[in-house]
Length: 390
Image (cartoon, rainbow, N blue to C red):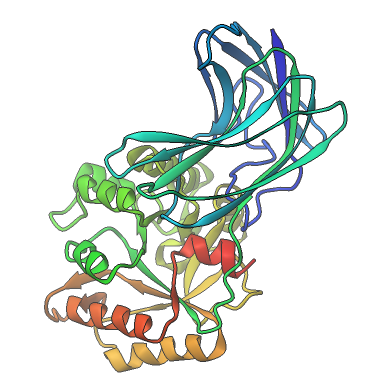
């Protein structure tokens, strides 16, 4: 029998892909929000929340280790995988101390078809004092998502502190552009355009209309899951798209927090980004969103600079009345100033319909190709927050 103790220091920052790193979002009887415990080969664990080095910690008591079984262990890991793309480079860091012989850093990768494969990154021998562990790894071919595992196989005591995972910053010398799609409606043509042009986009979705099939033009659940598997970012746009400032606390919680949980369970990916319905927010709404997301976007027109507030991201909401040349001018501004532009779309159709929030598919394709021609970085919103704003 042995104890595994995890403590975390700084709160979740934009550059850190570890959610709820401080373990603050939990109750005494539950596993901390966004975390789970993996057990195999007869090893079992029980946990409790205890005072940590900074704030709270989780202490896990594990029994059943059998040294004759090679594939054994207990792992503390994030609840949902993180979307990744082949060739991306990630940096991992934590602090450890203890008496176990080795502590392993492994990564579980997911393929497009849902199958898994594993890579052992490194292992460390802890001591009685805190020591820092750093390592860097590259996403291998075929991977579309990953989960980092901290694995212990031997009897003893081990403690972890300040776990973080991040990518190198993007400088955006020639600008950065994100293509975002809101409301999960009328976007049947979008996956083909993104596939043909070879970019990744962000989809701000409302899970209830999707699962309950409110309208024929609402995105099918199968399409949402395809987009997630392909490597696009799936983000939260509230459960049902109500006006957030008018909601009582319990309904606001459902629209923000339950919605995030629901989306994560539907697509098996971490949800990091939020978009305020109707662009509406106040101090109460922002506080609720901030506890569970790394960023939020409104509808204020503008470019994002390095010092932009993560929870007041600016955008250009593209409407049918806007010409391609008009939108290209915003891309030019991002390219010339080294800033980050988020282009937000709603319904995409083959022709103009007279609806304000519609945009022609051919014009969307033209804008993507123009951004690529300008050599701007085309990134998802969560990438922009983690790698440009930080």
